Image (cartoon, rainbow, N blue to C red; front, side):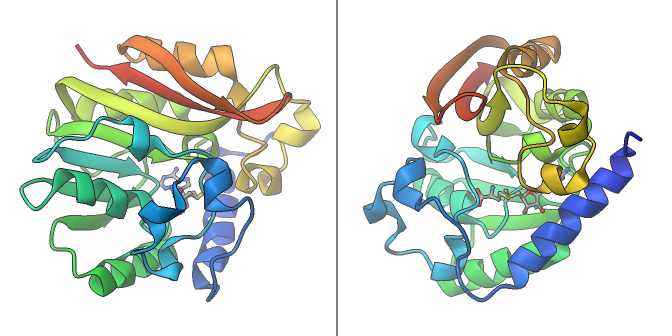
Length: 235
Ligand SMILES: C[S@@+](CC[C@H](N)C(=O)[O-])C[C@H]1O[C@@H](n2cnc3c(N)ncnc32)[C@H](O)[C@@H]1O
């Protein structure tokens, strides 16, 4: 039987809470394999480099000094910290995540780094705790596939961006619909498989929210499940 949105979120939250409590960075592939330059990670605490992403959206987001950046599903904070380097002290970066244990890990990492221009907020990316039209650039790394209501995520991203603002996200997609048996298992959602949409449906979802100039900047991996980095603009 199909799971409810709340059952899926609960399974995803439980899974990432357990990962957040692990002492070491946890997963493969290595950061270099998913698009990070090892040099850009050397100054980050090990606890921030968790291997949970599927791209490097910050590298392609064109973040400028003074920008306000929002990271959807910020995890241990890796992309928040990389973005904060680019905004400098005159800008700021907000990370939103629904898992309290992950927020605690990210906040501890921010203290280790002594960063004053980053902030982590608890919330759903489907109901962002962010005011309308206040963000210059939204980034996200391997998170939107985990959200049961992707239309709400894209609508919320559109709402909080200022006119001219950009969305640059890396995420897992497929080249066709997944068998129901895979999509119905919340464990598969937590592994970034069960909630992955066909690429064309994902891109159409971004357009339906009102974004223009939707373009795939990078593809990684092989059929049937692969990652894309997409950019889109709010006019
Ligand atoms: C695969 S990890 C990616 C973390 C981070 N972006 C990175 O690259 O390391 C997914 C993160 O998204 C969060 N998350 C999943 N679904 C969410 C939702 N609907 N709303 C807010 N956060 C969510 C999880 O708690 C977890 O921290």
